[in-house]
Image 1 (cartoon, rainbow, N blue to C red):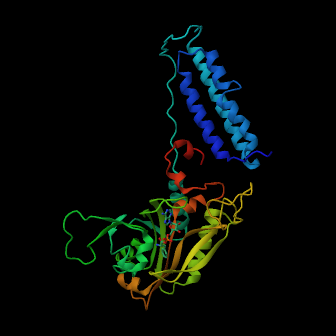
Image 2 (cartoon, protein in one colour; image 1 turned 90 degrees about the vertical axis):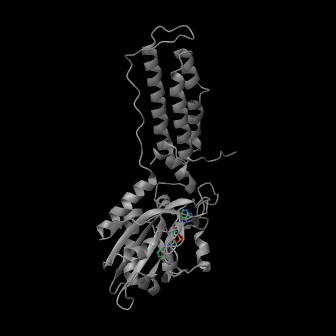
Image 3 (cartoon, rainbow, N blue to C red; image 1 turned 180 degrees about the horizontal axis):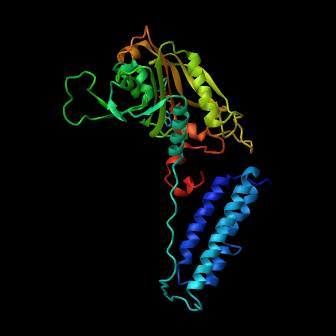
Length: 362
Ligand code: FA5
């Protein structure tokens, strides 16, 4: 009977957990060093059990798991040695002994979150081609993420954004654009806000948190998007495609491919959705063990939307659509980061499990 394949990152997480438990047990002075050695490194220990799992890990991940096994083993051995040195001759149980000359414990190093790493990299890539990172509100008037983008009140297109509405503290004033507040469901709220600055050409990259009433393997209620907006004279779809190609090559590497699918957004015309071949199953939709890829299912994963800025939106931002044109795109940062080769994450919710051992793997 063939053994079931298990993921290397799972075994690594369990090893790190076993290490943490072992190091805390070593501090338990009611157990002798010999007893601890048997418990933590003997044939029935968690370490021995997890070491046996290496044969079930996919071949390409085995080396990485092997390195972690040696590190964990070494750190338990060092812990036991330090304990033996600090309690020489300890024979009896329940002896409490405080050695104030022992070196203190170094607090674990923090890790930059994958999303933070992606934000830094995305910013660098766009800055190199003349875009400037800007910030626009994440709690905004309904006008900016909806009405200014050609989605009047009660327009059915709004349903797709599954928005969280907020009570405005106090009474809204008379300004018709400042009546209702939302947790912005997309970074496109920055489009008209950027145009209102009155400076042309615009080459912005707006990176912010977004909020929607959604949760499953590829959706979280809070996520990040980066929004590109380029407005100038004679901007064309060719420019849009060129910027995508540049980004994809820089961020994912030359071997990954994207495709544009015709789509509909109220605020761009024409509109597209941008897909990338899945980084988990490499576009085949099948995994090594023959099962179907859980994340993408058909080999492609949607990264975001794009299109040429709609004339109504330009007008709402005070720009003459007969003179100027522009393109815009908005991509999810979590999904973009998950699609990077080597990340191998198949559930977006893992990113927000808030466990430093998860983050230490990247
Ligand atoms: C938009 O949000 C448009 N504003 C994109 C756009 C900008 C189109 C500019 C045209 C011009 P969409 O709803 O498809 O489109 O979301 C874009 C991307 O955000 C998705 O492809 C996905 O990568 C990410 N995303 C959306 N919802 C979630 C969610 N709940 N969790 C994680 N990522 C999400």
